[in-house]
Length: 183
View (cartoon, rainbow, N blue to C red):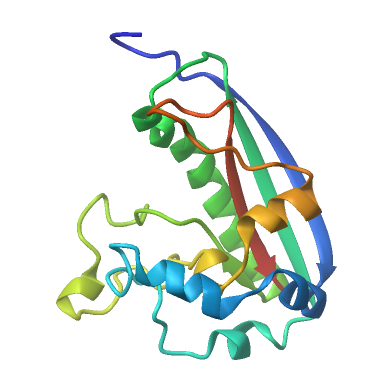
């Protein structure tokens, strides 16, 4: 397929709620996921990525509940190239980030967003690289993965979604976003 792509999609929302201690016990493997994070080029280079100054378990361990939100984004066109996936996900991520921050304020909790580029700095490099403070600490949130949670297992067991992976440079049949809030 050449030229402009049909970037229309259908988005389905899934949610689950459970006690925070149960989510931490069943879905967190901090040592394993930290090793994976260390292999990423963003490790230590973005404020949403490890290593973190605070003890991550201490940050979440006092909350009573966890709300997990999953969005399954199914493109209306098939066989799209993987490189247009960000174009499909960006509007959904922007809307969900706003919702997460508002819910965090309402519930006096801690939101967890998405892996990837910071949506608040307009594509500029993260200030962490230069050893400067975050420009948007009121908005930037780590992902659940960055705190050691298994998102594939979370999606499958709590939301009933099997995460699909790309093959041969083609986008999978759907994209999955998983985020959450501890409160």
